[in-house]
Image (cartoon, rainbow, N blue to C red; front, side, top):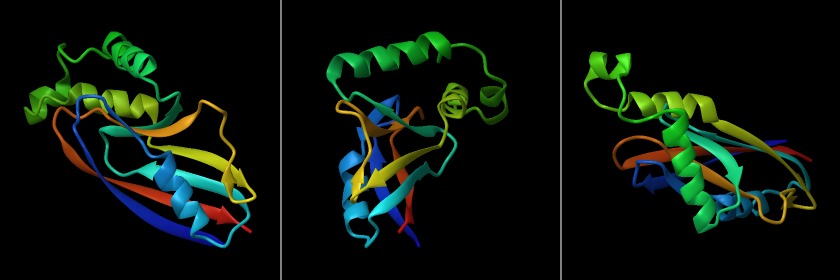
Length: 138
């Protein structure tokens, strides 16, 4: 069986990291499925999905790492073409990826003790975000 649901979220942009584990867990418990996998996918090209230990120090480290890997204030062809200043956002989101698959058993996500599912919004402004959660199992 496959069950598909959507989450609507508001982000602040600028590397906003939003923990969505409780939302995914709630959607999972609403299904009749006991075991399988959950796919979490963010629509749009300037945000991504991953897991992280959602604690203040690591969140700052994660944001700083993106600035080192894909700096905001360098020239991007995208910015020249569209003049929206979010070329770095597209590159960051492409590197992180738009989806994540998490197994579940006994109606519980199989995550590590300090592992949470997060949406990372790299855009340079607040955004309304839609996350598709698709549960496959039995």
